[in-house]
Length: 434
Image (cartoon, rainbow, N blue to C red; front, top):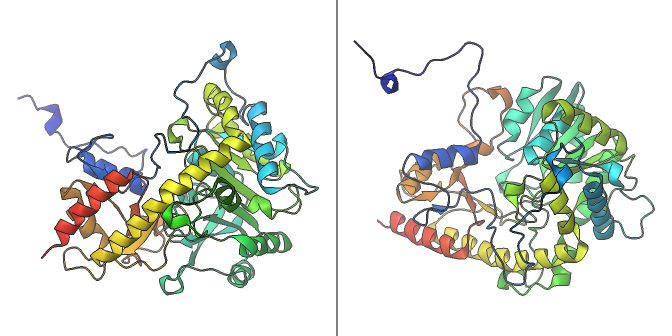
């Protein structure tokens, strides 16, 4: 008797372990089982981790073609094209380090093929240390912090009732009390939108240098910074938007001696996620190690995309893009916050950065008052969200099977267009009607 191959149970192999999907990949995979596919106009993806990528009013024209030079058929250097590394260093110097004696050079920059590749290179370069990470934070950190056995990941809890604030005094206490040699965080934070900026960020940088504790700063949302007067009504000027871009690079005293490593790329701030061009900036000795790790981890990024990215590092281009981004995303931020609050979703702290709102559904009716249940109910209405449990970073599941502190939370993205957001919230209003 023949057996239909599709009816056979899947075989497990002893050589391989099950690898969990990150939050966004999980929720879109679940949605695809109900017919979702990228670009489907029937679906509203409030779970997406990318901004809208089309033209924005006042923004520079989008690049829709990439020339390929004859030598672009060859491998790119593992650390990235020298010309792009120079352009990135120059952008950081012009934006953050005018008048400062210590300045970044191409040797302070390593280019990689995506944010996870950049973070993985850095993780592979760490020694036998204690590394602190925050809860909640970016979902992909979980596997990243688990797969390398050369450091110990130690969670640091952020409290909702304090608006997820964490002072420099708190930082000092954690470093000294837990013997931390490095701290990893997204800033602004994905998912809460909390942002360490200005004098607070300067104090973090000074403390890291004083205590010899490396700051590993994921700054992929550093252009999505809110709080300036006029942000919410879309009247942000080019000058104001450019001034509000924030980075720890502004507060580093000596680029080769201060233990500050910065990750960024075209993914969010330039709105080119598909290009997979990212970078790491830090002391030359650390960048050398990071690039060496890339030689065995990923082999380097795409040469044609790196060459095309050079033009995007122009300072005036970045100012114009950021001003347009602020006008559109500040308006969408206000829309998202107001509509969620009207539904009865609790927002502990309005986001100061990113394009996410972190909200609790604990006060909603039964069946919708926890993240997984709300996610499933919204999915039936062709709306994708991300349950908060995914941001309860738990490397190796060492905290056991206890219920997550963030079981009642979800992350709502205002990355999609305003039209998509409005349709999604109208559907959720109907879902919540008695």
